[in-house]
Length: 596
Image 1 (spheres, rainbow, N blue to C red):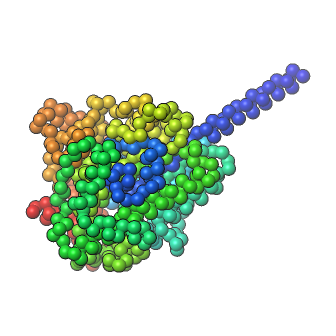
Image 2 (cartoon, one colour):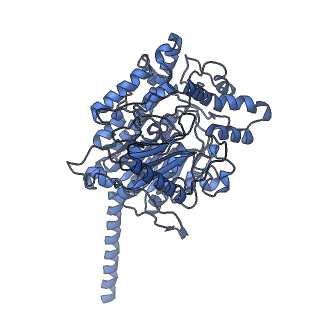
Image 3 (tube, rainbow, N blue to C red):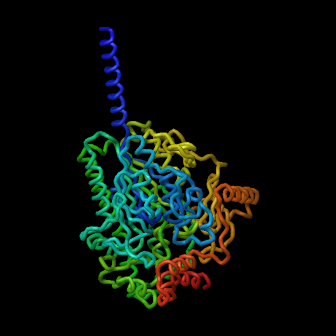
């Protein structure tokens, strides 16, 4: 009898433990990570935009807006940091692979794909009992062992390239033979009724629904193609913005700044730089104004279409009882793209789209078969009031929206009535992974994982700021460094040391107070020489610790991109023409403008 009684006690104890574990699993929140592509700082309504983004706005109203969040200056380095919490140079992605020089590739951390020395947040969550799903752009490696299905994601539909068409399975650049889509590790053909934002949310809903009844929490990563070039949108969304941009980019930039100041996103007095790539709107012909306004209308329509599909995902979660236990994170991989041709309708700028089977006609702009980007002038409005764009270390390339939202912030993690709905605390791309794990209650990997050495996360958990427990997670003397092809930056407290290379930059170091001067107008280097020198020394340490490699002599982003394109994809007969049309033209225009 005593043995039987002991056996029953063991069984009861085991059942109790299982119930406790089940309860713990059920209480852990679902996490939805929504990542826009090339979205500017002021491109959504919560940050001062005129674009209709009610679903993103609802997330902001129910959560917290970060007004001083920074990321990498282009996509793959940002994605590496977001998913691993490790600095991109150490994680193997100092730049996109399309822009790496052969001399740089001799270094093991200069491959442009996610290294095996880092663990993704998806891997850690999956091993902790989460379902892990991804639907969208990957761009962290196309080899079999680099696919998202091998880096912690249970179900995937992934576009592997830097970008692709939003209406069909077509490459947007001749560097790719086709748009490379994979599902669960195998090549995938897109459906005939494909539109990127709608399709990605459809797939994510499908993934979540497959396991909805098993009680396990999920991590849903949705990296949209919006608003990466080619900028395309359904007609009904484009129609909402026809006529909205007829007054041009100068008026739009000022209007967005005024709204951001009124909302408290920015200080009352913010000076703005005028970028040399911004033409005089009033000097354009009426036909050019009409065309440029529609380019921007398509861009706005693409943002609204993304927002509407985010709303579809939210509705699904609410209808199935999942919303109340879900944390949402919304941000962008980098700032807005500013290298689109000033006028893509004229020769030779219209030849690259034509060679790829696209057109740039006004009537069909943004629709299937159309190749569209926004004018650099409107890009300066997309990042208003910031300076520079994607690929540069100015605030316009690095500072983007960040919203963390969801009822678990209030219920389960200490959010109080006094908790902030907005914060100017500095935050960095590596902080996202650490914050996701914190909300999930999952430990970071440390310096070993699955029996091998790995790099520990350097990112900070932002939950104390979200809950109102702390005003900031970085002390005033702590530093964060970043580099992309010689564009270099060091953040320390409210100060930013920055160097932007030509053609838009001058190649010199500058010092700014980006809390009071986010437009980077007043250089403080001569007024604060000691701080300037200390930060220069700290940047040197960052370069050493992160294994930043010197640039080959004569290196330029566009030149290397052109060289790699010629070597890998093009036939000799078309190399010179396509390289000039595709890559060099916008930057030659930039250089010409700068020299005026």
